[in-house]
Image (tube, rainbow, N blue to C red; front, side):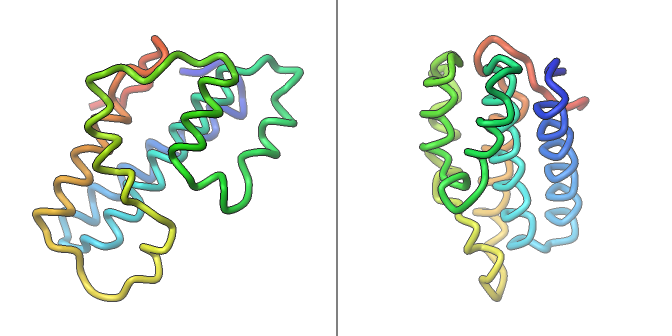
Length: 142
């Protein structure tokens, strides 16, 4: 569990949104499941960033985590390493390649994502969320 209160807030949100995604996937609500799984990855990246900065930089960094740019995984990963976080472990890279197709625009997409694609996306999100990044185990309780 991250020591920073702000990092813990994003960490908890990531876990809750991921659990919501799993429930939606089970109910065959694939588009919503992908949206929330993607959002959970975003929240986890923000938790990692906030856990990497000194408390004196937390408010400034939190301000950077707002707006359209703050939904961009590549920018978030760059910010994490810039703030002192470790490089992404090689075993996590392929999972990021899969989820990097995510966009907040998914929330506006009518219809249903093909179940096979949704499951693959949620599995990749799970690998990221339960994986080790920066030496910190931000895994779920599963």
